[in-house]
Amino acid sequence: AEYMGIFEPINLRLILMDITTENRLRKELESLQRDYSDTFIVELANDNLSIWNIYFEGAAGSLYEGEQFIVEFRFSPEHPLIAPEVVFVGKPPEHEHVYSNGFIGLSTLYDDWLPSFTAGSICMAILSMLSSAKTKTKPENDSLICTMTKGGSPKSLPWKFYNDRV
Amino acid sequence: MDIERGSKENSMRYKEEGNTAFKHGNYQKAVESYTKAIELNESESVFYSNRARCYKAMRMFDLAYEDAKVAVEMDDKNIKAHALLGQCLAEKGKLEPGIERLETAHARLMKSLTLCAGQKKQEYEKELQRNILRLRKLIWFKKDEALRKRKLDMLANIKRLMARDSSLNEEERTKKYEDIVELLGNPSVIPERTVPDYLCCQISHDLMEDPVTTQSGYTYERSNLRDHLAKNGNIDPVTRDSINPTHIFPNLNVKQAIEAFLKECPWGFEFKKNEDYHSCLLYTSPSPRDS
Image (cartoon, rainbow over all chains, first blue to last red; front, side, top):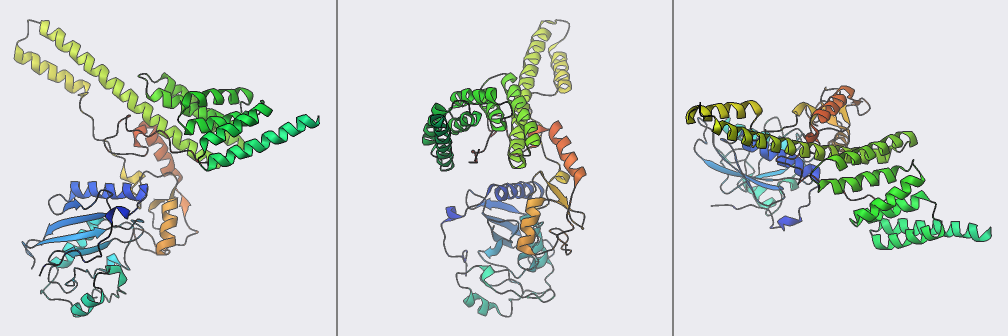
């Protein structure tokens, strides 16, 4: 089944952002379009740069070769001090750290976030995470997480990371 | 004597009234208050410069200019009056073809800046510095545009002269012309401009104003680093090493490098891609301050 974006619908224009955050996002956008143009395609969901949809394909030679994915980035008004909310929209990949509702169990999106990370580096981390999978499985607590967070944001979960596992 | 003293007190009251109105964005009311103050006491430079500030906020630059001029004539050390004169001149100069008025405006702002040092007004100094850098950016764009126009005219002349030279055939003429364009630098092509990464904050990716370095060796804009530490704890924004917040030092060399870069490339201040002098924002809205 297809899952659309799992957040509650909100008025996209209400997301206020100050000029330094906007400048930084604009620079990230330019850099992504210039340096990663053959790996990631960016689409802006609104005109203040706060929500991006990024299209990419599973890497050649990986279990996800040829599969198409979309991730949605929702940037904080205090980006880059606070991590963006990143989820898969549409059909998420079958991976032990990716939940059926699109949530991603990647520590750099939570405890390990640093302001030096960019949308580009996060996308590379996600692509890497997929490429290094040995088998395709769903996370153990998949249905639990999905029911717990119906309509909520990934940040509403108390994520705990053990080594490389969620 | 009593009447005189009463007038002085009343004029001060009107001034305070004007200041309050200005703070609330009530510029017309502020002008009226300052005018009443001036009627009672016409030798206070500050009354005129405050009124000028209101006129400028209402974009009535000619009136602002007149008042600022009077203020400066009364008190050559009136920092805000000099700054206002500069700003009014700059607004006018922006719409004119030459750069003389803009350079006069720049001189006024520089005078205001030197006065700040003498009177220890560091808060105002920062804002004034930014206005000066914006003006330099505007002047650079104007000069650049004038230069490109001169090149275009020159090339048109050369083309005409070459057409008269019968010793060359069509192909030779085109080749020679292209050589000249290449040597001169094609005036229709705007070169790609970027601000060097090593002068930018690792958090905002913007050119730094007050660069500071952590134990990791990475350099950040002081205010951005402070915000990051408050939000994410005492870890380095790039290496994740733990930081002692008292071991953060100003990076004087990078600051010098930034100043040198801006001197050479004034367009690098508040850099936006594909900017030209039409899109150059001169000033932010006035911040209400007591005088």
